[in-house]
Length: 424
Image 1 (cartoon, one colour):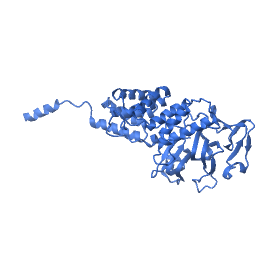
Image 2: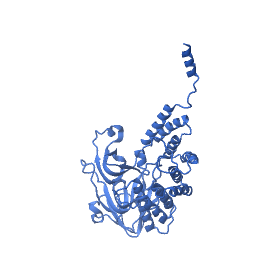
Image 3: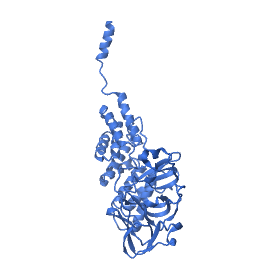
Image 4: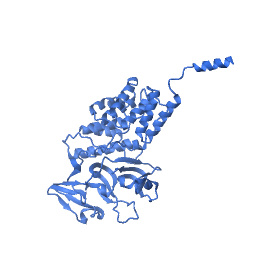
């Protein structure tokens, strides 16, 4: 009996651990799961709970900094990343994270130092090259930007082996630079373009000097892979003949020939030649488009939306006709497959191909969703702006569960490619 009491006494005075390891892992793994699903605010709360139990755990700080980055809280993300760098001074992923945070917060000059350090340790680091190319692009250093974009994979062909989201982003950025230098060789326009975005933050478990092992590597979410960011103004710097203006207007130079959607021209200057005959539009699309050429400017606007510009470089893009503002005549255009085969009066998507600029009408910068083989994307039809790659669109039946949730008609995209979507 005494022995039992002694045993109980010993257990009573045994020091308790300073945190509950099981509870810590529960919050940490929940946070990673929520981050993988793209629910960054919920992930932040879980990581904060894990941090309360283990304040200096590098895995917690890493994932919390990534979550804060995606929530747009760049100052906190920067402070947390710099704190980690004091103990891991040569960590390639951490240096890249810091450079990307500084780039996204508009501090281009500060961003270059950690990104260049990354290339000192890992000269072939494609994401660092991509981000440095974007930094150079914003200050008008076109040759430097193109060099970095090439190193990031801009010269890979669409769909070729090794082609991925980094290469696609670099390819689009390089195409924009080529158009910018061809049309404005002496202009140093440093405003950022929303057409191109850097890749999401790397995990510290990626290869690099003095890396931190986390035990469980978070899987990037579909939202992260799609490059989704908080909505920002869709007005970008000029591309080709298109110059966005405040108030949602778009100035269109007709000198090289353009095609414009009917009903959106609100003004003009000079003497542009507007041709609405069937011969002026491809594939009999005269009921949707008009041609314009000559010395003059058209002013176009789509009420409630603003222009968003995209450069095509030998690619294809199928655009919802109500989201199209204009495109260069150099682009080939034809009617694409109409997803709603039962409604013969519905206008078809317009399939653009070749090299040139396109102006789309959106409420804010559209999200880009990647579509992979075997993983189709279902989305409200009203949100679809355009799609590209080898994807097959299909209008879902009204009985689809999305309709019951208030999404209305829905579309499903299968194959391999991407979908641009706008919430309004």
